[in-house]
Image (cartoon, rainbow, N blue to C red; front, side):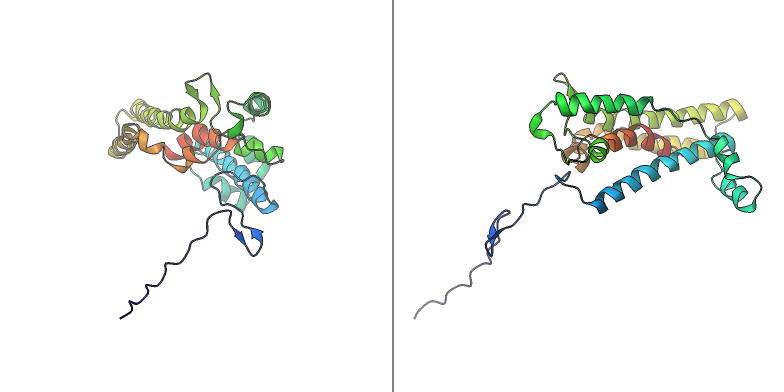
Length: 229
């Protein structure tokens, strides 16, 4: 008796295989080689909107005792004008932007750490914001992406929390239970981060993202400011 033939398993096409005479583009993780207008507009919106949130929060904490609704309500009710609110915001500085621009120009374009890890999209703004180099370094051991992802923001997070507790003790002569709870729980999170830092090296931030303005700004400004609110 002839044995029944087993149904063959479906074949899975390899990335970059030819279908109907056309080569299928390979999928890739990380930063795109080319940028469409929708992606560029989305990036610009997010990168402009996120700093404005921090800028507004700083003004609210400094001028309105950390009330986020009072400035908006004052404008809506006509008690103050937008110009009055804007006058209370801290002055802007372009020093960090200028330094970063010079660094991107000389490091990314002229003296890359590894030319094979660089990705140029043809759009300077996108290159500037999203980064050109995958792991820019100084020498052999100092890696910018590894340093900024785990050091300034995470360490500042704990130090700012402790500073809030010290200021509360100075103003009121005691530290409230809620302040103690926030410091303890968030300190445990930070301790866990450093204890399992090797696991973090496998995340998308490290494995796929290039080091650009958004990553450096997020680590130094967004993380310590927003997480400590």
